[in-house]
Image (tube, rainbow, N blue to C red):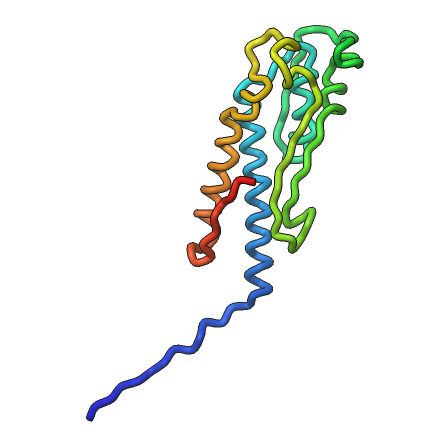
Length: 170
């Protein structure tokens, strides 16, 4: 009788190292996707009259190192609706963002990007007579597609298929 038998040792993997690398890669991915979102939003055309609406994107731009150029075409004025002088600085003050990634919340494996504003130009058509997107249209703009496309590309390119990660919109 002829018999052959040979086995393979189990593949050893340092779980801590793999977790740390995965956390770092996904943290970088959320920031890259936020950059794509911001660039797509800027390309879509944010209204620039006094610079207030576009000014809401400037703090995020500074954080992500994306240039947000603003050239107002109208002098600042006091708005009774906004209860402030409409200018770039007022827009910056009425904007908030948060990015949860490997730097802000290491090891949590939670990755989020949030941006919000209370500038009325983004809320209702009545407050801005221009051609810019407002309300629900602003939420469903091409910037959202650019964000998820970047996440999908980065995960596909940078993480092994064996991890079998899927992107879930929350």
